[in-house]
Length: 220
Image (cartoon, rainbow, N blue to C red; front, side):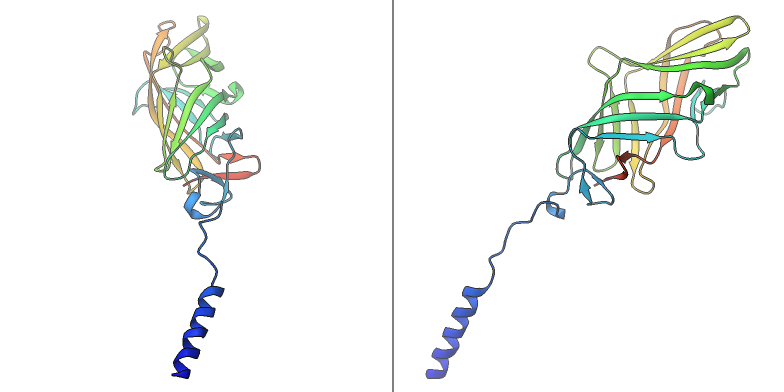
C-alpha cells in the first residue's frame, strides 16, 4: 500500500515537471513561405525584397517566327527584376511586381533575311504582375486593359525598323534544381511594323539563378 502511494506521488511530480507542448516556432516547416533563400525551407524572402535573374549560363533568349523554327532574333544577355509584394505560407502563391526586363542589344543577332543587326529590344507597359506557386507555376500578367508589349528594333537593307509585338500574358515554370524560371514558346502577335517583321513571335528563355541579394531563391 505504501509502495503504491509512493509510485503515484512520483508519477504526479514527473507529470508536473514535463514541458508543455508549444506551437511551431517561426521559421519551421509549419510556416515556411513560398519563397525562401539558401535552401528549400530556408530563410523567408521578405516582402519588398528585389529578386533578379540573368539568362542561365550558356543559353540564349530567342524570339522566333514560329514555335518550332529557328528564324528570328537571339540574345545571350538578358535580365529580369521583380519586387516581392506577397509571400504567403506554403503551399500558396507568391506575388511580385516585374519592374524591369532588359536585353543587351550588343549580345543580340538576327538571321532574318534582309536584317543586318539588332539595335534594341524594349519591354513596355511595365510593371507587370508576376506570380509563383508552390507547384512552380509562373505567370506574368499586364495591367487590366494592357498587354505584355515588346519592341524589336532592327537595322535592315531598307533602313531602321521597329517591330512591335504584344501578348496577353506569359506562363513559365520555376525549378529548384537550378533556381530557374523558364519560358517556352510564349506567343506574341505583331501589332505594328514593316513587312520585314514576322507576323508572330515565340519567346523562349531560361533565367537562372534567381537571387535575393547574395542568396539563391527556392520555391516551397
